[in-house]
Image 1: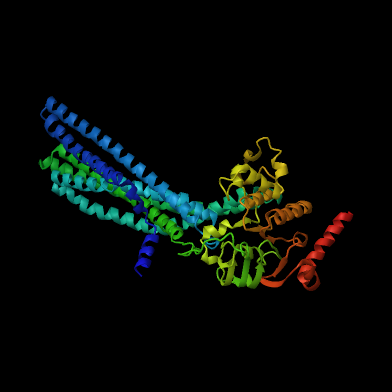
Image 2: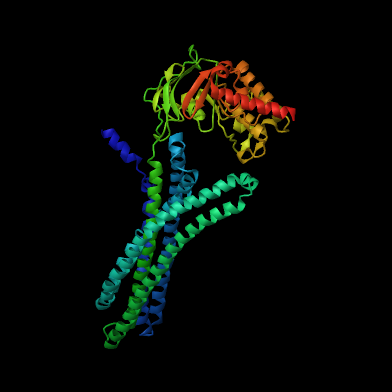
Length: 590
């Protein structure tokens, strides 16, 4: 029970916990800002001395002496201001870097189930935009946590020292200013929160259009997408304008109250000068102190705005950081035995699976893939074909039943060890900027050229890669845009084959290949690697040599058998096969 409580406390995101890496700067920075505030407090006092004693008595040496003291105070104040600013900047920037690192590491622990909860754009905005607000809030706190109290208290004490009666004006003005700030801040908070959601939507539309610009232009949907973006951007603009209006109201109101207070100080101060209760220098000093207090209150209002943004950003990041990976390794994972007779064996025992506890995508699937066998999976779009293969490396966990690899429940393996057995080629081929070599070495970072070439040959990619003058060091642009669809698919297949995994999953990853290349690829995998292979495909010709074929229909397993068996007894499979063969015959006669 005690461990659970500790884990819960640890999971909560606290941006200030990152400040422990900058302990010296956290204390030294505010200390410098406090000294800066004190320099501002004492300067008007010496200025009053110049007026009341130096100028009044025409004492030039005294004036020069006070001027030197004021200059020295201002220089020291500037030095302390620079040091304090430097400490705040280094700390806030370092804190931002540390938080971004932790967010990135944490998001990379997510299983597919957790990634389904957050869009790419909201993760990006929380990692960049929200972290920036936390940086800004931290910087403001470090710069003003000591400066504002010292400036307020110091100026108030000095003002009371100058004249107690005039100081009563502060007692009237301060509550009015604080009321203005807190009322407007309360109205700002929901607008700031909704602004984050609108920013996420605008960013999402932008990202979708940038990544799918070719599709947009192919369908002539530029105007439609421009309208969609304009609507989202206008909603964001209107939200920001509301914030602007509140800000435009708050600061003029604050200055209006302050200016009235200054007028009152000058008005009543004039009477006090006439009666001899206050000297001209002291009145000037009092006005300066009042201006300093007013400036501190305005700075306080700005800090409240920044801290409100910081609180919202903290809650959004906390939501991300408190989302825990639902797929974890057991405390005592079993070791992988590569010499076992069951090495590469995959078994589904009464497996059912659904996304977010909705309708089952997979229902009561039971099948055994012996080591070296090829299992085909076919069915309509959205029927659950990919969901079946995602359960093998625990990209998702089953809701019911058991998935076994090498004769053991996949949940008994360390997640990293389990996935090291599986080479996955997803539906959408994804390459990363760099070189072909860097992309191929994802499964084994120290793979030799011989290993890479072997994988390329099996994937039928060697013929076009060898034509590049720089061969394996040929550059890969972002997303692999300098390769055709078929080339990208073959390179991603080669990446999955490096280090010869025990299980290979080809998730509709040969759709851009011609039939001859597809056949060569399947034959090479079967004869050269002799690994257990799962092929998800829409083409019956790609599966006809499989040892077993699973026919999926709306989450139900319609039938399981060989190509010939399914043609005889499975109507769904036969219809798919005949429709494709008719199409091929028709195309061949044209």
